[in-house]
Every structure is written in structure tokens, then in C-alpha cells.
Amino acid sequence: MAQSDSRWFSPARHADRRPFLVMRNRIVAAIRAWFAERDFTEVDCAALAVSPGNEAHLHAFATALVQPDGSSVPRYLHTSPEFACKKLLAAGETRIFNLGHVWRNRERTPTHSPEFTMLEWYRAEEDYGAVIADTLALVRLAAEVAGTRLFRWREREADPVAEAEWLTVSEAFIAHAGVDLLSTLRADGTADREALAALSPVAFGRDDSWSDIFSRILSEKVEPSLGKGRITVLHEYPAVEAALARVTAHDPRVAERFELYACGVELANGFGELTDAAEQRRRFEAEMDVKEQAYGERYPVDEELLEALALMPPASGVALGLDRLVMLAAGATRIDQVLWTPVA
Image (cartoon, rainbow, N blue to C red; front, side, top):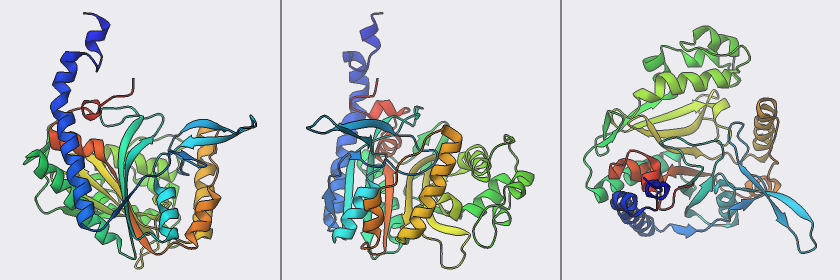
């Protein structure tokens, strides 16, 4: 077989993928109509950014912006339009959504692509319960457009229309890993690494932090059981795992962060947004300290974002992986099947 016959652009492979791609377009059109009906404004955020995001384990593509005089300054392809959207909220926008490409390095699996499409939206002056409701509605809309009664992924099924399961992260860790997570968090929200290490049902390294052990338990024990039979809303993340979210009013150990799962696949990640610039700077610096220790690099802090937070109203927002949603709704088995031009 000629090598070109196995490429995504071979006529035979494209013919296999085309039904998924056409369905993608139909779902995208329905999503845009859904937002328009609710008076959202579509925005188009620039991809080049001063900072790609300040989460320790998020990896960006770096480039340089060359000035007319030949000098250059570092820039990054954004990993999310979040910082730009928050600046727009500061400018006075109240309901916005962005549907566009984002880039994340070191990510390639059947559900990850280095370049993918993110749907991100924000509601000013609204609780994060409102954007959770949005997310559930959009998942059901995609299923309706595709005529799909059940999402399927790796022998798991989820009914997108059934009433969602709501679990706090603490409840999920107890149910699926036998770990009392809250007992490993101090009253001020800081984490006790040794307490979690003593309870961990999974192997970990001597140098692994509380967050490393948390992530291993989540991925190995908890996530595979989420979104089975119906959609799961996993909410109230530990504050130390929610660098951009405000803490809850009832418990400083947990934050207004949620993720939505179907068939063990994470589809969306949202927050009640943090607007305290000093606290946000502290969290960014702490995350970059972890990144520097783990990977030997750090990303700059976007000073304009911190300025914008002083003007930004209370808000809630969500980032949803459009390609993953299309994949489940259309019945695809790999993310590259729903990308018009997959990354080589």
C-alpha cells in the first residue's frame, strides 16, 4: 500500500471520516444558534498571547513576535482564550462565547490533539450553576442534532438526556477510591501531602506532591467510573486544584470548579471565576514554581489580565472540548476522525 493511501487525505479515508465531519458542522451550527437565542455575543480571541496560561502541567507552543526593527519578544499560542475573554468582560461584555482553535503541547491520545477546538463562554453576574446548566443543555443539543440516544466510548455508555449525576470531588473519591480527601486538606485550604500519601490506593513516587498523588487517584480510580449510564457533574474541587476559581462560601477547602464527564471522558471544565488580582497572582506564581521544579521552565504572568480583574464583574465560565463532544455524539472512536485536517 502506498503511504499516501494511509494518510487522512486519501480519498478512501476521507470518505470514512466525512460523515463525522459533516455532523461536526451541523453540531457547530446548532451551538451557534443556541447562543444567539440567549443573547450571547460571539467573540474571536487572538491566538498569540503574552502568557499561554499559568497551570503547572499545561504545556504551550512557544514562538516569537518579530518587530519591524528586527527585535523580537516571546509569545505563545494560547492554550485557552480565557485570559482574553476575561479582559472583554472587564471591558463591559456580559455574555460572550468563543469557538476557536487552541494549542497544547505534549498531548496526543485518542481523545487529545495538540491543536483542537475549544468552546468557551462566560456569564457576568451569574452563578456557576448557570453555566453548569448551559453545559448540560449543549451536550443534550449535540446528541439531539446527531440523533444519538447513547454516547459510547470503550465499552462504556451514557444517556445524555437522563438526569445528570452530581458528585462533589470528595464524594467521588470516597465512592470510587475509598479516600477521605477532605481529611487531607487543612482548614485554610492548603494540602497535607503525607495525609494523602497514607490513604492513597495507587502507587506514587517519593517526590510526588499532594497534587501529583491527587491526579493519579483521579485518573486511575475515579475518572473511569464517571459518566457511566448518565452524565456526571463533578464539582467542588479542592481549592489547591482550582487556580482560577473562587473558593466556596461554605468551605474554604474547596472551590467553585466543576468538570463534566460522559463515558469516563472529560468534556468540560468550568469555574466561578476568581476576580481577586492579588490572590490570582499568588496562585499563578505558586503554579509556576511547581512547573519550574518539574519541567525546568515557567511562563510569564499576564500583567494585563491582573489589571483587568480589578474591572471584571463577578462571572462564571466554561471551557468545553468541542471535538470530544462531536466524537461522542457522532459515534467516532478517535479525535482525529472529527478533525477536518488532523495534525500530522
